[in-house]
Length: 612
Image (cartoon, rainbow, N blue to C red):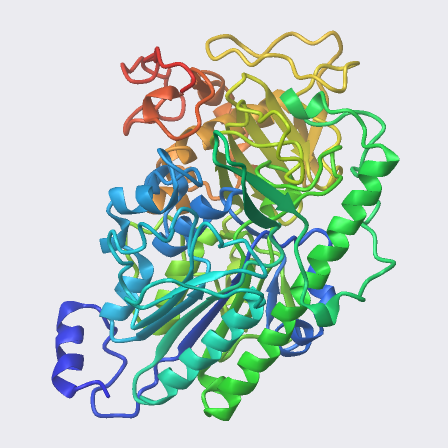
């Protein structure tokens, strides 16, 4: 039970809003966060999950335009649990030197992250399942993770082993579980933590449940040579009771599935079409993903039942999401992630809880960097200025108010560094090291765009209303659909043999290059944004102008201003975030509407670094 003096100290420190009156029954809600691994939104995987449908979708709100800001599990999870974009966490990979648990510790996040702040605000905090890559059986106590009253983590090298997981509870030694199904163990541990939380009904709780489904199964086989082991990557494994399901299910044959004409840029544009054997394997991989989610679905139902048994369901927010999306066959890609395509970055988010509308779908742009700020708001914890996100509107009135205001945030900043593989299932494929990019996803009420700048000096621009499959790169060279003209940092856009296309925002058409200049300016600010600038970038791009939407920024009075602005570029393709490799860097006071952009020394600094 929270002691009255302790609550008083929390109020004095500002860690609690004063609306929680000392001496009255606790009104602070509980929060349960269920986060799967690699679950798609574009193929409607939630439709295959009856418990999720019954208890969350029908009794909560589905945020259809929710995005991860980096399509890779470790950087994405660190963003969720710090409330910061990956370029501010500097955890941009899944392994050393740019990512994983060691980098999380080196960057000081163990002392500054959401679970710890929630715990310090008087919540019981629990976690079970996968936290992040490279938290393993040798470093789990170097140091122990902070911020939890109770934890039971999956550890490498068996994090992704469905049938042989290794768990590490609190400060205990790791324990292997031979021939036990990982998701079922996560469920048992989650239910146990709910029982632990219920022992102190006067103190609210925050529980994260993180099964690995529907991630691929990864095992390690001894080789007796150098290297001493080989990585075995295979399709997700379902619980035996679900092996018979979805025998006839196939990947939706959308226009971007294994297209006849190449799509994308750089290495993606060079991929050959999938053959019949590839497609058969991709469909079975898809079926295994859906089968593996069935144990997650059962877990959702049992978590709901346990909350109800303890009498706390009506005072509990349940958030269901995943770390990143997934592609499989789209754009000729095999199973995997790491790209900026909608399949990879648009992810599920369903929320159920007090005053959350039931059965509602919302099209407002939200991202993983918003989750920490949202939890803080419902818990009554003051917003942190260093959060790169903002609270997601959860009530009918807040959703409607933001939708009607004309000031709803339209943008999601997307970024990625490092290598990827054309197919996650083909571990022997040559990795593609030139997969670093900065991007923006614009979600307007009457328009939508995706714009990216790659480290290899190619760009993408897709009209997401007219071309949701991202097949027609409007930045590309007319007459050559699988390449993009080079983007020069210091020159005007290249001359096209035909007139560049017009783009439409609402009822108004503009030259394509006018749109690109605005997106360049927005990307220039967002790629290194911090705090409020990430939420309201137009205040920095066009200071003092009162601009809140892309459509408003399209006014012709800003044409010269944007045309003179330097363009985003990279020196080379690196596996992690190094600020000196990405430029120009926005500086306060850089320009004002109508002024010529001044030269500033950091804008054109060049790096001599090569690929590591």
